[in-house]
Length: 182
Image 1 (cartoon, one colour):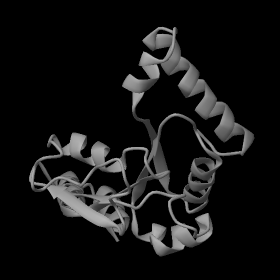
Image 2 (cartoon, one colour):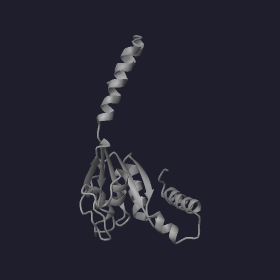
Image 3 (cartoon, rainbow, N blue to C red):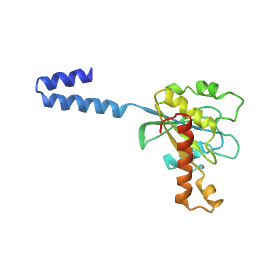
Image 4 (cartoon, rainbow, N blue to C red):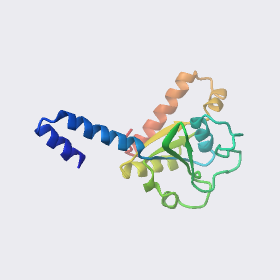
C-alpha cells in the first residue's frame, strides 16, 4: 500500500506527499518492536551478554541471572528504556537438556523472533552450525558473538589480533562447509 501511494504521488508530481508517506512509514517502523533471540550452547554466557548490552551488572535487580550452573530454564524477555522497542530474549542454552535440537527450536518458537544472536565460546559446535542453518532457512538473519575471550587470551601464545582472526576464520570455514551464508 505504501509503495502504491508513493508511486501515485510520484506520477502526479506531488513530492511533498511522497515525503509525507515516507516519514509516516519510518515513524511506524521505529515504533515496531524488534524481538532479538539470544541463543547458543548452554554455558556460553548468553545472560551475561544481555546484561553487558544493557550496561548492568549481574548484581542489579533487573539483570538476567548468571552463574556457573544453568540459570535460564525458560525464555525470558529483557528490555531497556534506552531502546524501548527492542526486546532481548534470553533463551535456555542448547545441549543442557536431553531434547533434540529440532525440538529445542520448536519449543523456543524461533519463528517469533526478528533476528538472532548466537553466542559461542571455546569452540564453534555443530549445534551452533545447525542453529545458524535453521535460522538462515527461515529467511532470518543472525550474528555470532564470541564470548569469554579473556579466558582464551590467557591460555594462548597468540596475539589478540591473531587469535581473533583464527576464531573468525574457523567460524567462517565451518559455516561455509555447511553451506551457511556469511
